[in-house]
Image (cartoon, rainbow, N blue to C red; front, side):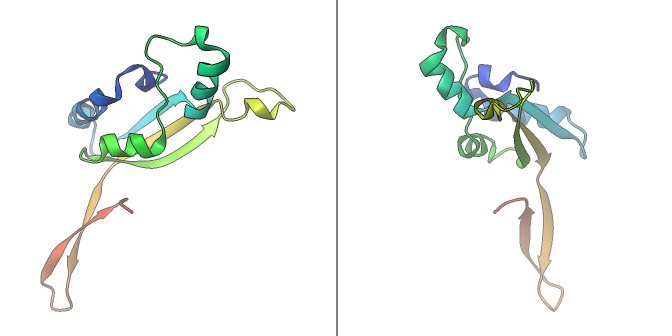
Length: 124
């Protein structure tokens, strides 16, 4: 999902990812490329005319909250740059990518082999 999630109102993300889950293969991943939320915050102060009508900062903790009852969890997140500007540290981390994977469950059993419940892999 290159550079699109920040333009879709966050209240629609849950339904969107539930629909994506229906179409994705069981071992598939969702790759999301978005502007770093701190960079968007900076742009709102210093360069707001470059922003689009909906350009929301998608902080990780809020994003996780919107997908918590979907089949996905955030497997990884990493800031990066599309353009390289040597010696300009303020340009590092202008974008972030997030990789979503399907939640996995392990059956928990006691010593006698009796099922005790499910443990969600990827949940803290």
